[in-house]
Image (cartoon, rainbow, N blue to C red; front, side, top):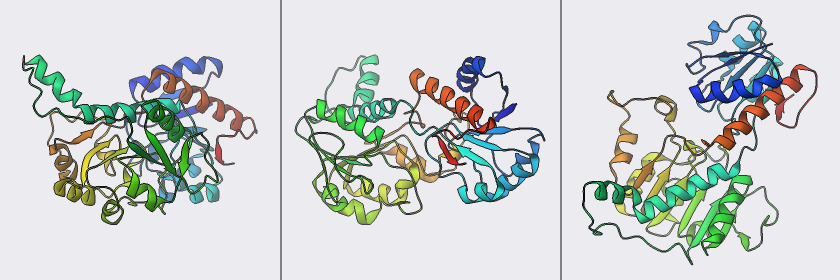
Length: 330
């Protein structure tokens, strides 16, 4: 059985090859992302393809895959906004994902970004290396006693809540799919209340057509002036142009993003010797109170182990006529 990987990096080959010792699939790793430009290169006889967050599985791409005999699309991630699920159903292709892989990895990265922006440790590190021990411009604030709003109270949101409670924060959350708090001392509140009460807001929800750009000028206007906003979920949750205007006015006091709505053109690539034509990301990175990382939150050894193990097990089960719990289209 052949599985073709797109957007493959050296660490994908390392972890999937290790876990493949239990399955003995034929693994083919391609660096290019999947899209209309490359889909015709998939060879007939390929049983499954394995894709990541920036691969684009439109109806056009899925129809070609079906013609090639591909039976399984395996996402080695939790999000699925990049896949035309209805087209996959119509084509008779099964789709699986990794709904939970070390939620602590993403939550801990969100906290790391928060602390870096607040206490300005990235700037202090560079200063001290230049023998500058001045504290001017490095003033932060205590997390203790602050109100932290979490949008999306799934496994990652809950892991983030536990950490914030450890700092002595008041934690509130909004999740339209949660009927009651899943954790003591975390209050579920309406979205507008969360926006108005929070000192820090962290996004931990999937991207859907309904919540695309829901952080925009209108919702930012309901937040406290000087709000600290963190996004480790999906870039499309934030209207970047509106966020830039709020940064310029000071309404957003700190912005930490591990995801970006145009990231497929940038992230997971070394562009250090190139001119980046994306004016929005260049403007964002020019602010001293903005921290950008390149979709790094998931990147721990524990998470990659779980991603590889879960993905290969799901493909094995589907190939043998069984439906694992990771399946979205069976």
